[in-house]
Length: 121
Image 1 (tube, one colour):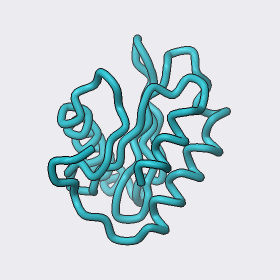
Image 2 (image 1 turned 60 degrees about the vertical axis):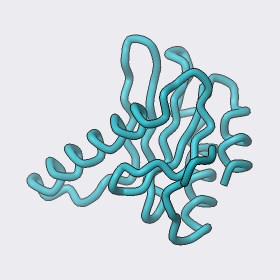
Image 3 (image 1 turned 180 degrees about the horizontal axis):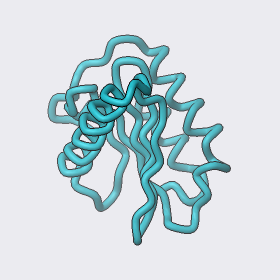
């Protein structure tokens, strides 16, 4: 999985990526200068809240979500029983890098059931 994230992080504009379980547990991370646990907690809260809201309006489950903030962008993409979280520079067009992001998510999904990481990155 580390190789998948490293390859994704080589795409211009991508600052880092991680995989989290649906419950927010961190599985793997390739972020530099970002607190993994805080980023995983952020992703978990976004996923939980969005899922609840989508359910209430009958829109099904999350497949992908892009959040734009004043200092960057975050993409959350479903990867089976986990989510791929990608952080990018503000000026990066995630729409143009979406092919690489979706490819990484598909590879992660194909790895099967994942376990939360234990003391390693």
